[in-house]
Image (cartoon, rainbow, N blue to C red; front, side, top):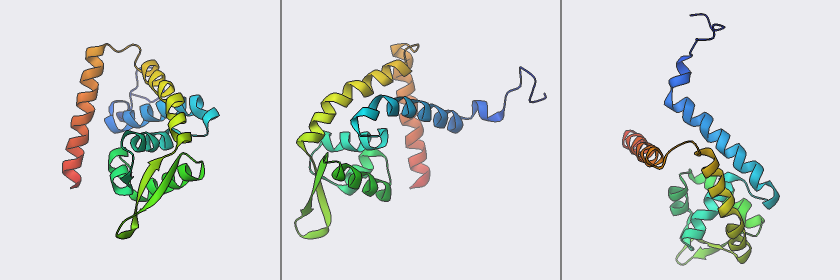
Length: 152
């Protein structure tokens, strides 16, 4: 079928990787718009939230929990520190390792931004039933686990 035909479907239209990427970018762009007045990006938000969940983690643990690689996590932590949302403390016995702590300013931002992030997700899934949502989350975890097994 010709690409200009109204019923034409690209192989990418049903590609899970392509669809996940597009969906991620759409949600991320919406969240970016909604957070723009608070000097934080969605990528920074996800790392700050992991620090908030468990204050005092080391960078490696934050990277694992946020699903990011070490260089990306370092860049984000440096940015969050420059904005005053976190501070780093050198680890005892290992100068290369430091513990990351959320500041009062970071905690205040969490209180403001968490409802914005939740509303963004609610808006994104507004036509999905609770059962469908639960299934989607289970499937995404399973896909992630499958990929993890393949890359270990």
